Amino acid sequence: MKISAKHIVLLFLLFFGIRVNAQEYATKLEGRVYSKDGDVAATHVSNVSSNKGTITDENGFFAISVKLNDTLVFSAVQYKRKEIVIDVKILENEKLIVPLEASLTKLDEVVVTPYNLTGDLNRDAKRLKIAPIVTASTLGLPNAYVKVKTQNERKLAEADSGKFIEFGHYALDSTFNPMVMINIHKILNRVTGRTKKLKKYVAIDGEIALLNKVKRFYHDSIYEQELKIPKENINDFMNFCEVDSAYTEVVESDDILRLFEFLERNSLVYRKNNGLE
Image 1: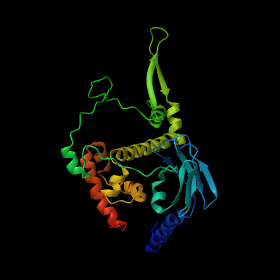
Image 2 (image 1 turned 45 degrees about the vertical axis):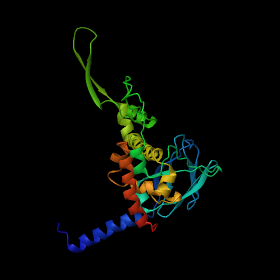
Image 3 (image 1 turned 30 degrees about the vertical axis):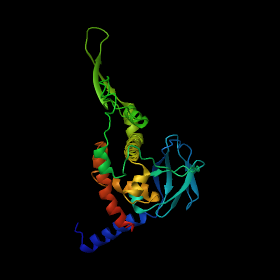
C-alpha cells in the first residue's frame, strides 16, 4: 500500500500532538527526601494543585501523581516547608530528589580558623601539614576494601539473584537424573517491576551519597565566601554540578583541591546563568 506525503504529515502531527498532550495528564512521580539529620520518615508530600498527598517511608522515598506545573509541598515538624513546581525536566526524569532543611532556631554560625589559616584554600593547603588518615586500609585490616551495601542494594541483590534457569541433577541411586530449576522469584520481581524500582532507588542512593560527600568536604561558608554562591542557592548549585559529566569521577577521586577547582569552574557558569555576578 502506498503512503502519500499527506498521510505522513498527518501521522507526524498525530504523534507530536500525543506527546505534547501527554504532559497534560497525570503521571506517577517517584522520589526521595533527605536531610543531614537523617530523620525523614513520614514527611508529608502534598500536591496542592490536585489536593492529593502522601507520606514518605522510613527511608524518605515517596510516589505521587503529578501533572506539568503542579506544585508539590514538602513539610514536617522538624523541617522547613519546601515547594517545588513540576516542570518538563522533572517529568522527563521521572524522579525527584529533595533536600530538607532543619527548622530549629540556631545561634549565628561562627567559623573558627585555627593554625593561622588565611581562608584561601590553595594557599592554606600548601602550608598546612596534615597527618596521615588512619583507616582500615592503611592499617591493613581484613576486608578493608569490602564495600558495605546499602539497604536498597541488599534488597536488589535478593530480588535479582541467580540465573533465570539452572540445570542440575539429583541422584537417589547411582543413576543420573537431570533436573531443570526455574527461578520464579527473580522472574516475578522482573515482571512486577520490583527489580526496576529497586534499581532506581539504588541510583538515587548513589546520587545522595555523592552529594553528602561533597558537603562534608566544604562548609557552607566556603560556597558563600569563596564561590560567591548565596546560601539559599547552594542546593540548586549542587544539582547544577551533578549534570557535569566529570562530577562523579572528581568526587570519587577524594582530591579536595581538584574538587574545589571543579566547583569553582562551575560556579562561574552558574552565577552567570542565574544573574549572580
